[in-house]
Structures are given as structure tokens and as C-alpha cells.
Image 1 (tube, helix red, strand yellow):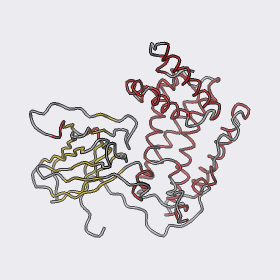
Image 2 (cartoon, one colour):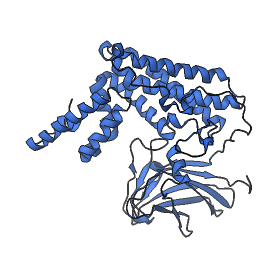
Image 3 (tube, helix red, strand yellow):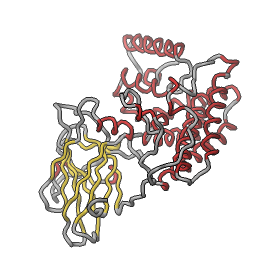
Length: 391
């Protein structure tokens, strides 16, 4: 099994020899970690390490598509590709192992107690519906898979998608149940489903990969059946953004200058990254502009949500924000070591900055976000009516 860029490019003899070594190493990885649920991610980063230009030229979506074609066949890959993209998108927002709002490697035992996520009831129900739809699609697609590839399909697609679905159901229905908004049985049934799915995984091919998967790794509390408790504080209220944009929605402004003579710029989408898979990189010195109309108050609250990168050069990661003709406000969002902010960024996959800006009474407005350092990747921008002081 050769890397895709080795198969599709005419390499010289030296490159072929290096490619053969890469293939042998990857096959050894298969032996050590056979049919791992992280198999594709491992192959992707190995291909990127081997030839990042080839992967960049191909694109992450095409890379995933070709991998699915190789493992499951062309007709199956077409149906499964959007399923895996949505699976990765939902995991990007919050990984299954983070759904209990717990942490490891903390001194205070309170972090090992499963508790509410800072999500509203609507947000929770929306995520549950998205996972239910995904799981049902995976189940229907299984009928298209040839009998000789059913085990591969279960390991590579069905198990990771449906186990993630049940992990979300277990913990989100538990959160709703703590507030009297769902039955505890739904959480318990999800736990039981994870046990059954894992048993099926470990019995594939007459137990060839027995004990490869564990439904309670390291016996961490988040993997247990959720204890039945009653919430002592109310669930978070939904806050509705008046305007909401993804990074890709912004108009690119080269060199940060919004003039008639500025050359036309294009935004660069970061494939597979972002809460809606539309996070956009901004080159240093460039900016993205967002237009909106008819604001009814004299202040606007802006949430700027970015991918939680580390500084690329030096020790700063900054952008500026300006509204209409006001002077730009410079904002830093780099983190230091294992700070509390860094931990929160890892759990939610976003670095968030909130600012309040004065706004004039004219009909149309322009919000400009400019990258002051390399590595600025904008995921979302939210505009809210400011809350009263103390709320």
C-alpha cells in the first residue's frame, strides 16, 4: 500500500527508494496499531511530513476522498465522504472525551467530576440531532459496502462515528436530565451502546484485534455511566447573535487598506478547520471586512473567535479590530505554557476575545479585522446587543 503521492507522481529512483521506506514504516505502524480508529489521521500527518507540498496541492478533502476510495471502493467513498467531514467537524467543536467537562492532570479532584458544559438547551439539542442524523446515515450506508470490506467499514467509519454519537448522547442527555429536561434512561442506553459497539469491534475477524479498543480507557470518570444527580444551578441561557459570520464570509483587504485602488484579494479557507469548516487564514498585514446594517444601540459587542494557535514568529499573536473610521484596537491572544486560557482553548478549539465598540447611527457599517502577526486564523465573528451591566 503506497502513499498516494508516491503512486500518482513520476518520482526518480532516489525518491522511489525513500517512498518505499515510508511505506514500510507505515506498514509497521499498521502492525503495531492495526485498524486504529485514528488510522486516517496517522496517514494524513505522515503524508504531510513526507511531502507537505503534495498534500497541499491535492487538498485535504481530496486526500480523504482518495483514502476512502482505496479502503472502501469508489462508490462507497462518494457516500461516506460527507459523513466523515461532518464527523470531523463535530469533533472539532468538542471531542467526545471532552464532553463531560472534565480534565486530567489537575491537582483539584473537582476537575474529575462530570458536570455541565456551558451550552444552552437549544445548542445541546441541535448537536444531538446532528449526531443522530450522522449515525443513521452511517447505518444506511453499510448496506452498500461489499461483504469483504464490512470489517474495514465498521472499524474506519461506523465505530468512530457511532461511538462518538453515543458518547455525546450519554453526556448531553445526562446534562438535560440533571435539569429535568430529559430521561436518565437515554444517557444509560447510550452508555450500553458504547459497550456493545466496542465488544463488536474487538470481536471483528474472529477477535484478530481483540482488546485494541477499550470503552473505559484509563478508567477515567468521563467514560463511566453518568451518576444521576440534580443540577443546583440553572442551565445557560441562549444568547442570539444579531450577526454571525465565518472567516470565509469576510471580504479580503490586502495590506489592510480598504481603498478603491487596492488589488482584489481572496480569502484562504483552512480545509476542515472551524466550527462550520470555514475558518480562514489572514496573511500578516491583510484584513477581512464584514459589512452590516441598521444597528439600534450606541454600542456593539463583538466576539472574535479564532483558532488557538501559538505564535509563528516571536512571542506574539495579534490582530486589530476597527469599526467604520475609528482607530484600530490591538488585541493579543497568545497563551503562555499550560495556562487556564490555554486549557480552555484546547477544550473548545477556539481562542475568544470580546470587545465593545461605540457605533454611529448611520445605516451601514464596516468591521475590519487585520492580522498583525503570522498565524492568525479567523473562525467566527459574532455581533451581540450588549448585556446590561452585571449580567
